[in-house]
Image (cartoon, rainbow, N blue to C red; front, top):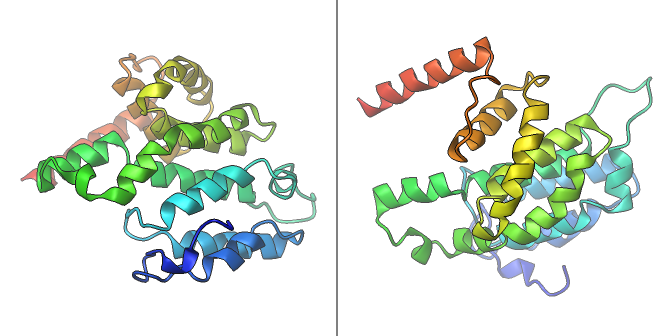
Length: 232
């Protein structure tokens, strides 16, 4: 936080527009859960737009990884009063942002960019390259949450871990993630999570036919039709 010149960083609002980030980042650890939730929404809004990695993305990702186990964030994920409406813990929001950002910088995105923009993508896209280099550090923060008591947190951590594990130094963790996949798929009804998990298992060379249900097959056929329509 203190070693970053936030005001000089590019955000979706343009170059040198990160001056509001330190206050919002500090608010993410406020004792008041309402303030904490609002600050989290503000931070993620300030650095998220159209699947793009910005200059501010990397230091924000480092900060998010550093606070995943902070007592204020952890307490929010322990549950809520039975009289209160259900909510997504701040921890789930943070893991979800790490996940979507990692997918915006994954191998498939790089391959797609190189097909359409030339093989110099990572050489020219410094922000994406910096985020991809950060994946082992982010994974080390996410990994302990794979065993969290809250099932929503566990699933969010697992889906975040998948694109991070594409980094070559994390290849040894993929067998462990496949084990988590085999525990998630029989019970999860979340379409996004199921798609991510099944895609990862196939990419890692695993047969998923015994884990797919009718909805998975229908979704796969629908995606194939949409892709064919786009290609044509």
